Amino acid sequence: MIITDVRPFGADPVDVHVSEGVITRIAPAGGATADPGAGEQLAGEGRLAFPTFADVHCHLDSTLLGLPFRPHTGGPGVWTMMMNDRQHWREPEWPIAQRTTHTLGMMVARGTTVVRSYAQIDADCRLERFEAVLSAKEAFAGRAEVEIIAFPQAGLFREPGVVPLLDEALSTGAATVGGIDPCSLDGDPARHLDTVFELAEKHGATVDIHLHEPAAMGAFSARLILDRTRALSMQGRVTISHGFFLAQLEEPARREMIAELAELDVSMATVAPATSPLPLRELLEAGVRVGLGEDGQRDYWSPNGNADMLFRTWQLAFTQGFRADAQVETALAVATAGGRSVLDPALDRVREGEAPQLRVGDRADLVLLPGETPTALVLDRTFGDCLPGRTVLHAGRVVAQDGELTR
Ligand SMILES: [Zn+2]
Image (tube, rainbow, N blue to C red; front, side, top):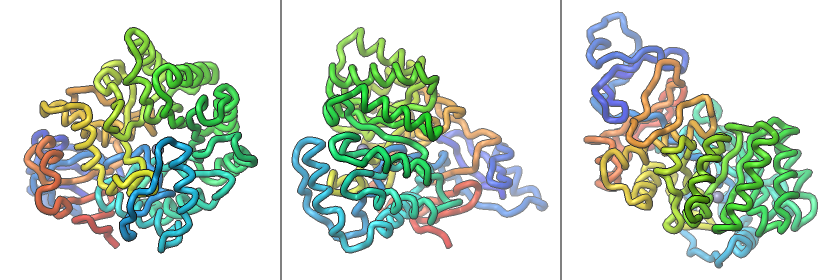
């Protein structure tokens, strides 16, 4: 297949040749149309082209997208929010596997084909939510790459039986073991992280720690994460999500912490929060991999999240105070190439001011979007209906067109 006349990250138009799911040639636009022997063609018509969006922090197991809107009932604090979700998650009109699959379909239809999703595992839901995320992943096999995090949302030790359930999930389809607020939730940070890293070692899994803890407490937990990453040689296999503490640390502690994240190739996942946003430019400058995610998608935790990462890209640019085109393009790079490099450390890091390149040998995951420039695309996303003209390819196959999944 040849995708003709597209502008990767807004650069000059090219034709992208694809064979067996991989980009095999990138040439200036125009050559393919002149070749009568060329295979199937997909007309890019001058659209912008990016690697598909990568959402590396979402909770497919709690989504309520597609269902009637519910007023937000969550209270303050992680435990209160968790209990509110626990009280209600069985109530919605659809079974949970239908909810996870519907939302993953919305994500693919809007251009996200690389996904790292949490699956909450606790004494209440046991493996029910994990199995629902697994069934969504299976429903989209070949159309999206989905990595599942076995996630102890309610802690590892506050309730009995959680660790063996995580162990089971890691044996049956979870690729990543999650942890959460090792000091403030379980109150025993060393034991919490030792357990997470032991499970990772046992299963050859990667690690992702939800770290909401503030300033000094967050820095203390991060210190323990870095120590274990170093001791177990897990460079490139550990992610810290949120990491609100980084925005609150004083210099030089912040600079030193960022340098060590880079040295040990510990990546960060952000959801572009309104308060305590990540020091994104400092992280990228130091060489830390950063990915973006939606977090809750209209669930009991948050009314935000519409399964369209173009909107979250705008939110990242806005919360970072980005105005210059090169900065907004950096937000797009994080939302696409950045998240992919979090999941696959063999891929290039995103650097500020350097548009990622499509490369021969890359899997042909592409989202084509109409727009004047990458920055205009992000800023104009709400003009009219932003889905017409959006084409999504995963491994060289068109999986969605105009916001609808293809058959
Ligand atoms: Zn989260």
